[in-house]
Image (cartoon, rainbow, N blue to C red; front, side, top):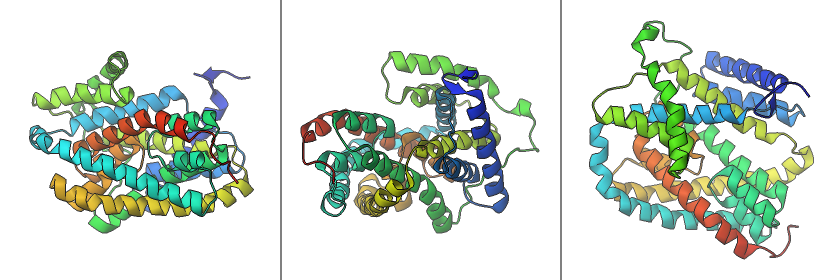
Length: 350
């Protein structure tokens, strides 16, 4: 075995980086929205489905999440907190909505796809991909059904939302590789080293999503004190590449026939999940007093880090969106072990 980076071989990581950057650059030149994310995702997913083992070191994923936290905190303005009094009611609407959305999706998996209740629920929950999948499989859920269902959900949300928002709102979601008009000295790069101790402290305090929340609180502190942080736009591109590659590499090991058989049902279930989330976004927008497109991103069934960085680059009220995404993630990951344990031992997957 060759040298490794926290368990990932150098060669595997080098190939992954080359594929992600190359496909990201092609997508950027082609003018696609969020090119570095979608390009890296499609490129790595294509190769992993073809049998090439690719990997992103966990430490790099953590670093990307830390950068997302810094970027989010830098976007905070004092008036953001003026609406905080409305959030308890929106959290209630979101909680009820999550139950209804998950139930609708699981119903399809059970009635049409023939999944057992445990696998159907595990494939429908919109919390952390890694945690829920691990718990469900340990309890006896069907691995392909659970993994493919979760992967289709996360991938579909990350791919479709930028396309929908850029077409709907007419905004650009492209991030240039470099911004030649501004010198590096003009950026507040000194804050980057603070991300690691902030992450460690957030872990000790048991904060949710500590790799993102710790750095977010640090940059938020500077923003609240009136010190506006300016971060280089190429940082967005690097974060997108890591996030996209992290999703794409998860397709490794899925057999083609299994992917086609279960993937068809997962695609329909994901469509139900997205339509149900869109329906939830309407009452949510009324209660929160925010435009529908902001509410939709706040309730979108994606990963916290992925939705947070999309909200930032799309300019869709990133703090409001991230707050509700973090809450959704906390509730689902806290409830998942209890819900899945109660479903253990039900009718087996067909």
